[in-house]
Amino acid sequence: MATTPTARGLRQRDRVARTVLHVVLGLGLLAVVGPFVWMALSSVKPEAEIREVPPTWWPETVTLDNFRELFSRLDFPLYFFNSALVATAVTVGNLFFCSLLGYALAKLRYPGKRLLFLVVLGMLMVPGMVTFVPQFVLVSNMGLTNTYAGLILPFLAGPFGVFLMRQFLQSIPDDLIEAARVDGAGEFRIFWRVVLPLCRPALATLGILTFLASWNNFLWPLVVATTEDKYTLPVALALYSVGQNRTDFGLLLAGAVVVVLPVLVVFLFLQRHFLRGIATTGLK
Image (cartoon, rainbow, N blue to C red; front, side, top):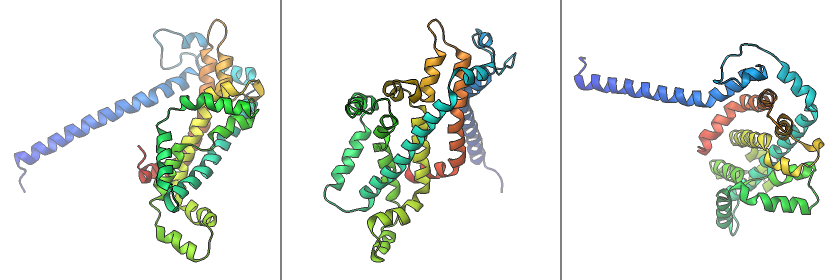
C-alpha cells in the first residue's frame, strides 16, 4: 500500500512530538536526579574542593574523611536508632489507623458518614504549620516533650492517609464483605482477615510516603527533643554541621548521603507495590 503524503506527515509529526517528549522527560530527570548525584560526589571531596567556585562535578581528590568525621563526631548509632524508631512507629500507626478509618468511611453504614468524610477532606486543606503550635501545646501539657511518645503520637494518623485508604477500599467489592458477614465474621475480623490483605498496594504507597515524611521530619523533633539523646538524624546533622562561623558542608553532605540510604532501600524494596498503589488509587 502506497504511503500517502498525509500519512507521512502524520508520522513525521508523531516523531517530532515523541522527540520533544523525550527531551522534556530527560530534562526533568536531570533536574530531579542531578542534585542527588552532585551530593553523593561532593560527599567524597575535601572541604576546599566543595567550596570551589564554580563548583565541579567530579572530585579531583577522593577522600572518606567526611564520613570518618561524621561517625566520630556524632553519636551516629543513637541518632539512627531514634530516627528508625520514630519513623517505623509512625508508619505502622498510619498503616493501621488510616486503613481502619478508611474502612469505616468506605464500607460501613452509619449516620453522619458523609459529614465525617467532608471533615477529612477539609483537614486535607489545612496546612501543617497551622496545627503545629496547638499540637506542641497539647504535647507539652501532657508532659510528653523530650520523649519518644511526644515525637510519635501526633503523627500516628493523618487525613491524607485516611483519604488514600478510603479511595482504595471503595474498589473492593461489597459482595466479598457481605459474604464474610453471612459467614458470621465480625467487622474487625473482616477488616483484618479479608480486607487488609487486599490493600497491599495502597498500604505500600502509604507506608513509603509516611516513612519518607517521618524520616526527613526536622522541625517537630527540633522543637520537642530538648536533649541530645532524643535527637533524630536530621536534627543532629543540622546542629553539628553548623558552627559559629561557618557550615561544614563536607559533614553535611556525607550525613545527607547516609540519611538518604534507608529511604532508598525502602523505596526499592516496595517499588512494585508503590507504583500499583498510585495507579489504583488515582494518586497524582
